[in-house]
Image 1 (cartoon, one colour):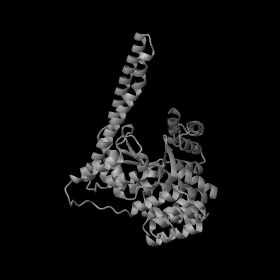
Image 2: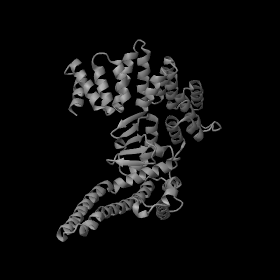
Image 3: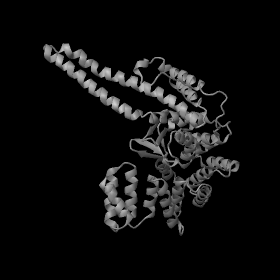
Image 4: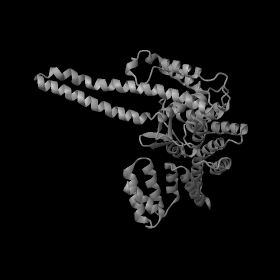
Amino acid sequence: MRKIFVFLIAVFFCVPARALSVINDTETESVLRKIIMPVALAADIPENRLKIHIVNDDDFNAFVSGGEDVFIYTGLLTRIKNTNALQAVVAHELGHMIGGHMAQMSARMEAELKRTLIIQALGIGLMVAGGNPSLGAGVLAGAGGVAQQSLLSFSRDEERVADEFAVDLMVDANINPTGLITVFEQMQNITGAAEAKTNKNRSNHPLTVERIKNAREKIAQIKRNRKYDAFDDKEYELVRAKLIGYLYNERQILDKYPYRATDDAAIYARAIGNMRGGALTAARDATQNLIQRNKKNPYYYELLGDIEYQMGHYDDAVAAYEHALKLNKKAPQIQTALALVLAERGKPGDNAQAIELCKTSLLATPAPLTYWVLAKLYNDGREYWALAEFYNLNGDTKKARTFAKRAQQKLDKDSPEYIKSGDILEK
């Protein structure tokens, strides 16, 4: 059971997406959506178009792709300590989108490439005309450096513009823009010593001290005594604690949340850490304590279900997951977790219920673990299709094609799974 659970944590919590390892977690995604949505709306992103991706990487980073996909790194989430600062980070990244900086940078890179080629051609011409290679060598050597300096300067300007857009977006969303200063001050604490030795002309970002100064000047222009919307940090604190509990080792968890800390976030992080470390009774006791404090939090019941499952208590795990789904019906990861336990328990009706749960979960979020569970549940050829989807989402093209071929050998040509297997083979 212990080995199975460790495997499931790896599959369930972290999913590769292109070159990134992305975390799927209903609680984290829903809390981040609530925090980010006001800024996204101010940037004219419709609520139903916003997609949030949590990248499992310790970098202090975030970026926006395609104007609607916001990628936030766990290294940022575990360090940023309040919602206002997180909103500022996303506002900055959306500022790049509003400014069209990706397209502009692409065009600038193309222009600099052409300029570099022209300069290099001039260098070659000098070498040929003079009959002496040294005549053009200096021009050739400097061509790449000229382009690099131009692009770095352009990038620094874009960062300054994105900072200004960030302040404007936050004000439009009625969010206190001083969160941007909080982020820069935190960045300065992280990289200040190294940045002090950096040549500002060799960096693609303005120095942090300059960004703090610019942000303060921009914010000073806003009407004083303006009242901004207040955001409760408690949900975000729980999300941070959850990530730390899953991603940090025991010593690191206790450094962040020592036993003397008795708030919900600290108990949550330690409970998850105890579960991962095999101290299941302590993990269950802590989680039941959290439930007594807040019986309407579905994610405490989700954690209890995880712990009971790891202890081999299938009935208790089912009860905990079902209670979580009563509190939050739109929770695809919890639906998949319940389906897994039902598949393992194997009581009459469990198999059919588990299949329906997986189908519902996949409609919301196609996830590898859900297909893996379906592969356990099917026994009529569709298990090969489910495994093909599992490997396809995990980026293992060879195995995906192997199982897609097996599925088509077993399935009726008119079945949806046969057709979907064909889609995988055609990629």
